Length: 309
Image 1: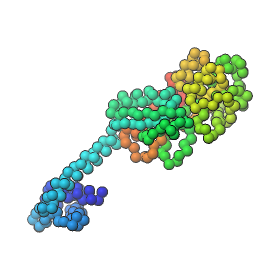
Image 2: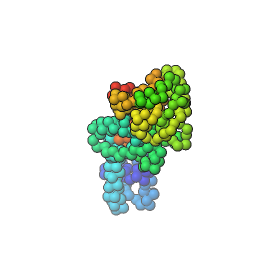
Image 3: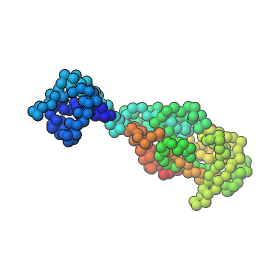
Image 4: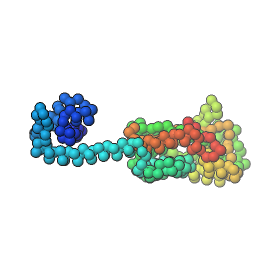
């Protein structure tokens, strides 16, 4: 960095053949400029400028060095300007990892809308079920993650909180009865969404200021929310589901209905995770875009306001 800076100062002096004018152009004191050019000459072991009280001229070595340095400084300036543009203008590939079901249910419209606002951005999306995420996910710009974050070395920005509800099919409730309190769920068949093989699944439920956490009994343990919804709609048991459009459609067509309607599950935090705080425009602006959509309630299915900041 110091050598490149010395080249830049030398080029300006060589262009003007005047330390005073060059110092004014660079916005630094003349004495500082003279000292740093002299340091550059000492590091090279050659005199680049012939100085007299009346004028400044390039030596033979200085002429050769000026031709090379002028090209290097110009390239560095172009690179700096290109990177500044990258910081200011969203462009280039944006790589995003996310849970498959959440991405499909809640993010598809967001990606489409963002692409219309910023046509120079292209998308590489990796979707995987939680158990397979470590195998499928590649290096990315953003990882969308739900729930507690185990890796404290990464930078996580809270996008919002996902609230879910209990659902079962009318057929199941006719056969097994309708629970009246969360404690009744231990006597029912529950469909477990398995987010992490290493932990026992617990269901955090709340009603106003009342909170309870249960360990559901289950015959099905599934790592796909789409499969959980299908099993629930077929009468296999009670499930926690976020009100995506597919769930609301099942409710409208009476394949599912709310269970314990005064109670909700979660809320579960949704994070945008990056490896650094130094983000190019495409990444920074997309995270801000997601946060704004969450604030406006646009991530949830129509007629549902269940994803809250």
